[in-house]
Length: 264
Image: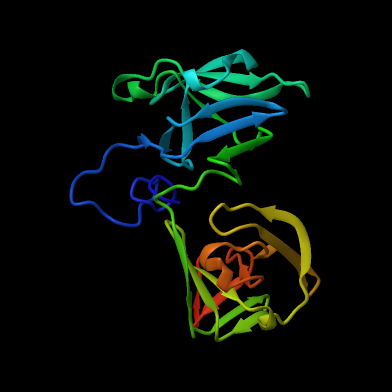
């Protein structure tokens, strides 16, 4: 996704080319983040900042760095330290709360080397571990949206066939294609394209751009194919065009588009 993930310009496998020698990786890039970030654990607001930095790092989704002055450090307990080639000394912190300590809930950059010095005395929280986080007054979901990430959905007349071991699982000549930054295009088929019954999985992925991805299994010719497909049960943005349409993982089943097999 975006600048530093996957096939993004500063990702590990960029899809495009520069006309100059690109910077060495792993790469750090940071910039002011305009939204207010608050972090809550139990009844306590652990951090509240309007001065966050958005940190983009090769191979990672965007992280939000809060100045130490905007964090209630009396609610934190130091756990240990490690060294990072680009960030220098990284200190790990737990959050103390009435419900018990939340381990490895935050990291601080104690002495970033050289050009990364502006990140000194900033903390990054693991937003999956805290009870809640807010951007302005909206409850956060999954992870903060990267301003360099986007997606859109286009209707198509390409013929899509999904099969496993010669058995057709779904087929349509009216798919929709979801194009997403630094990701391969995803083909979505309407529910009436299914040729076999699917079984709901316990797996639900979260995406702050498109919404929850409910996964599905299938049993085909005595073979159980786990989490081979997903659909968007709470679509957002352009994904409102394809509510509960199905997309399939090309590394688990064969997806043919106008006769060409999609690569995993």
